[in-house]
Amino acid sequence: MNYSDWHTHSSYCRHATGNLEQYVKAAINKKLSVIGLSAHFPYDVLDGIENMPHREYSMPNDELDSFVFNAINLREKYKNKISVKIGFELDFVEKQVDKHHKYLKKYTNQIDYIIGSIHNLDVSLFPDLFAFDDIRFLKHYDKFEDTDDIYMSYFKTMQAMIDSNQFHFTTIGHFDLPKKFKIVPNNKELIMEEGIKALKMAKKRDVVVEINTSGLRKPIKEQYPSEEFIKEMFNLGIDVVLGSDAHHPNEIAYEFELLTELLKRIGYEKLAHFDKMTKTYIKI
Ligand SMILES: [Zn+2]
Ligand SMILES: [Zn+2]
Image 1 (tube, rainbow, N blue to C red):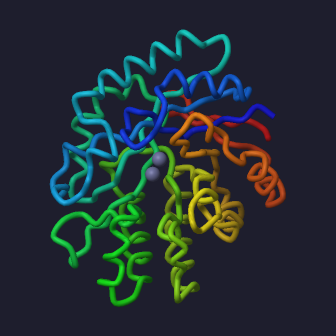
Image 2: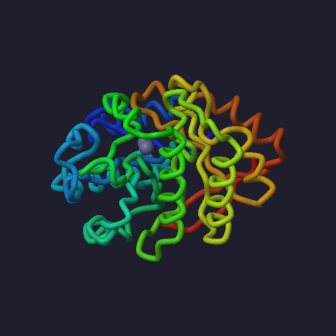
């Protein structure tokens, strides 16, 4: 099986280990057919990040050119061995979509896909953005009356992301991320309902949902999204890609065999594939 891994980070993202070439080489060693280089799009162009350690989350804006330039060179250098795809993991911050897209515009001819992700919530409890998936902010969870409020705010933000005409993306990243630290919903039915609402919107907009295996390396020990959500996705006819969210070259294609088996068991027969923001398919 020639796997495609659409979600990786590198030393450009500060908190990840290994340069771009080490990821490409590791992917070739693992006999992948596609390696997606998907750096976090810079945070330093946003407001409300003063209390967030954003310098540890992404490259600064002035390294964007270097990232794209290096990725293009690697795509050329290894074209006979692997297909290198270039993308970004782009945060959706509802009130600041234009700030990101102003800089993103320059690269639209080079990039193959964009993962739309939510790592920060804009909630009235905090003056700045709340980086809910950073373990150092776990201590703020008890400021919420009910931790389900985090899930609700998260899925409402995701619905706004899918609904936004200004926000351009191909793929929803780590769909049910608030479960990361094993804080599961109290009212599961309500949260499922909110997630399914987002999925129905995703189908309508024709964006894909990634099956992100990094959750298996986190306290929840489960991929994003859960099997229950993947079954809903299949029934809705939503396309999927696989992503390891590797932060080290060793994590490339992490547990892809396991997840491919799960997808087949649920009924999936093909995976999505992106080339210059256009979707095609590969059989599994
Ligand atoms: Zn992410
Ligand atoms: Zn990521």
